[in-house]
Length: 402
Image (cartoon, rainbow, N blue to C red; front, top):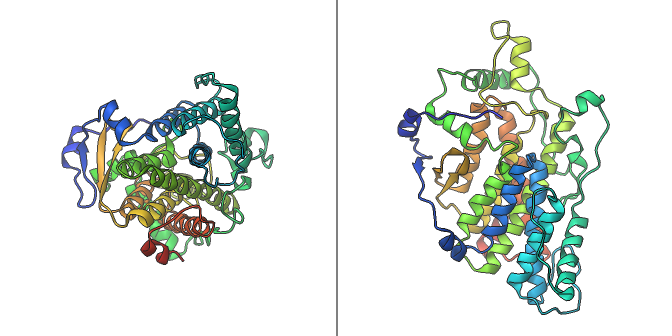
């Protein structure tokens, strides 16, 4: 994994109109706990995802499992309707907070047995309630079976070709929102975007401004970090910290359903088209640049569409439905606590998508089509959960969902 070194010059002068880099003052642990009880299990999940070096689709499953388990724990404790699982009619003498803590610990231990701590020993009744929620949650989102489609050596280098066969939560099928496809080689659209990524995405580029380098590093989130779905969960947790408890649970459930389903839809599109990456295309077709190198590390999965853009389009769609065009700042734990500020969630998604061109990893059309795919999944998720009475959106937001 490449470590981007951001120079002092970048930190001082890379100040665009829509995104600002600043130093962030950390909150005390006491203040964080008071602001958002749910931040604790999600921060733990981000840490385990990073330690396990999960790729983005697999990480999105972890966050989705956590979100629906916590939502259902609340519903179980309060006597409400659960999402996707049955709730036992038996009542247990366990508080909502104890149930959420117990479910989180048990879920993490089942998902990460080598790095997660063992759950605390509880009474038989309380343990039965926890196991019921965790086991049913895991049955909803099983890991997809490996696909033996390529040679064994080549198969080992690919990132989740089987993910297009993962079980979606609200999508009818993985191909429901499959993107329209990349433009033909040598078409005007392709040649234009090829030139953009060639000059702006090169490892050492005289054309890329300092802010482009900051953006590429800020949104990078490769395996070994919390990944793009984790980054958007971090943004969401900060946005909901002053909201009622039920609102927090509802938003995190909705967000992570959309992120998880977007990963499935994006990976279906990727392995359907099997499109070439910019560095491979430039090296093979440009005699003047046989050793062209991207700023970022090229992932081992097809180029079209951008997974970062799909995740970002989905997250921005969900967060905008709940909060509207709200300005916010996002902190990068991997960049010395720096913040990057945006005029809206859609503005942040556009920046995240564009960062992949600055990183030399994607073409423009893969970014744009990925954002559109993610937005479609978000709208579908909002509509489906509203129809099922799982969520209650503000009336204005509900009217905008098509």
